[in-house]
Image 1 (cartoon, rainbow, N blue to C red):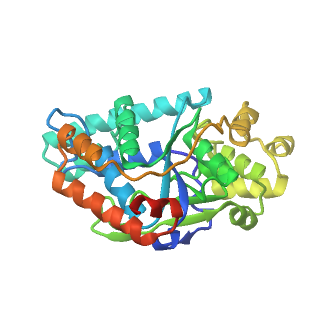
Image 2 (image 1 turned 30 degrees about the horizontal axis):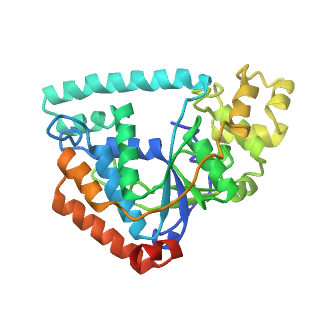
Image 3 (image 1 turned 180 degrees about the vertical axis):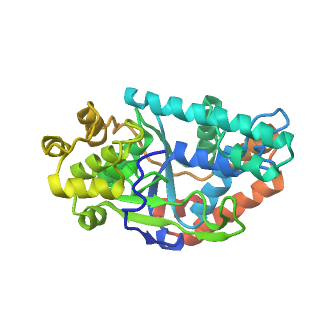
Length: 344
């Protein structure tokens, strides 16, 4: 779930058109989970091919990537590697939530409550190894680069942004800021008019840009203090955070005492995690790699059609139309010489 800084973080709305020509490192797992959650039928069932294999993630990855490419964004997807050992408790907790949601989903189906069934179904999404491999295969066919992170994908994406190899990191989670990403883009996976859960109300979802230097200036915190704030509130490595401390209280504590060490020395009575230095180190010195190469290529149209349509039962007419529209859009953009050369 990541660290909850939603009430503290300043952000600005941006249009997709304003991002034309920008390269973005996408937290692949984060985006794929969004596709698995929202791309479902009326009773919550995921998209599947004739063999019962889930294809919701492939549908989202294909159409959204092409849509963003048509807008002029150059995407590179970053996949998670082995998570830090401290994340094990959070991963087990997530698995329990999914199991509970699955039971409630089945109960809702049995009583014919399709709205509840869909709501619970969205909480059951699981990203399996074969789904990850299929996603990488599709990206290869689309000519979109991907990077395998040694550990956390957000940390690798943030590292690539710091190096200047990409302009921003894209994720729904704020952890990328704690990992040092200079710019964070949210809401890239889903934009447009969306219905609020359990309400007959719709909101317009737009991309958001969050800049780390502006966040730190607004909060009056350094990057190290921002990490300490995350630890107080709760991260994937200490779920739940420090009891009785919410985002605003955490911010006040750090403004008053400047670090977790000094908060402890002040005799606050707070039960800080014993391993907070280890958690802090995960964010400040994450496992990342420089062994990657970013190259955008023209799509292998027939390869994409063969994979999605012949093997996964996508509509060939829709797939070809989406590819043609995206390629035409890239040609018109002309934002990068190497992309222009695709059509010479």
